[in-house]
Length: 128
Image (cartoon, rainbow, N blue to C red; front, side, top):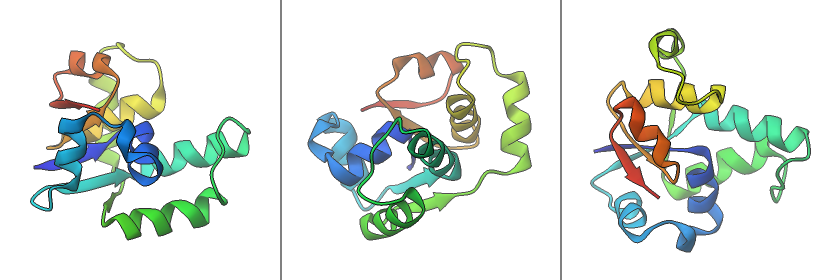
């Protein structure tokens, strides 16, 4: 299974894994699954850190790539197909980061998120 982590799950997986629900945490730790961190999450964390809305141990551009690599997660780039797929999504969410993560997950991933509203898009959801 390909697991796409929502941004808050990325943060928890890298710094507070006990916060993640047991089933989701077990799936993330299971080496049979491919765990993906989207470029969307990197973008979201960089913006939020620059606005002072989130604190990270170091600048996002140094901390995040190092920790993602250390955890053994893979990066998922944003394609133009992902971006264009957002046009047809219903407006369950207005957050552009969440909408793009959903569009990526619809490309063949299970989204790992605490936000149960994501299921309204018909995307496979593993609640974190």
